[in-house]
Image (cartoon, rainbow, N blue to C red):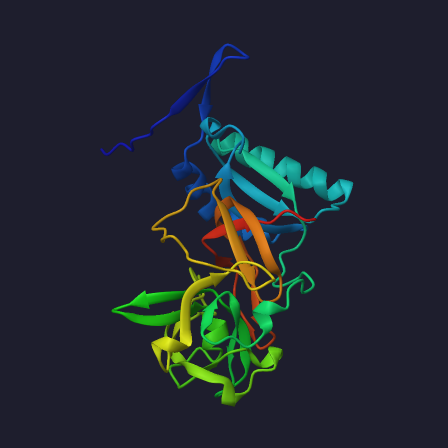
Amino acid sequence: MMCGLVICIYIIDYEKGMYVAVATFYQAFKLKSRIWRTMLKRNGVTGIGVGYADPNRPAKGAAIVLYTLRNLSAVTQTKLQAVTHNISRASAVPIRILGVGSFKREAAAPTQTNPRQRWRPVPGAVSVGTTVPTTAGGTGGLIVIKNNTLFILSNAHVLVPTNTNQFHNTIQPSPADGGRTADQIGRAFQFVPLTTTGVNFQDSAIAIANSNSLLNPRYLINQSGGLITVPGHLLSYRLGMTFKRMAKTNGFARGVVEAIRESRFSVIKPSFVLPRDELGLEIRVPYG
């Protein structure tokens, strides 16, 4: 007979003068993998991830983070609270419900213009895209280096919109920002194929420039053209970490890692709809 090993972690709640069991991240990930499809089908639920039970008190352990529309009806709220209460009671994993609204790509109105202009050499965080064999565009996230060669790191749906190995040119700026085939600076080099039948853990690709001199390994940080040197790279990240980013449409923003392994319905473009994805992390950017 084989027995499973269960590890229980307790903390002392000094206010109540008692030991309180806390959920581990292993328990939360296991529960999330079991319920995410069902929860995303519920009315008003827009996403689900794993985070802290209390972000201000990490020692209280892990929790499921459930994202919902902001203005749920009283009936919907009552039903959702009843369901999550039963799940928490059965699994010993708390569930936090956050009314944040729907997830949208580039929902904010453009606030910067510089990222959408023509740059030579090209830094990270400016507009890039392709015109061959089809048009697409987005933000070139970073300029990265491999074997002394510089590359543009961006999304696969930006640099390789056909999701195939055929040739894709890389232009700067993107077609939406006035870029044309004559603005070609390189070509797509490698990408992670996206799937419509399973889980996508990343949406990434790199493009190689016609010459290293066309790329600037710095990062655009504000609307006045300020550039910074990224001090290094991360092999991992943790809940509560603060990130900065610049994007060609939404501009500059800061965000905090609220949950990881977040799942939601993701639309890349009208003709290419992905299933509910495991996206790795969810960074919440406060409104206003």
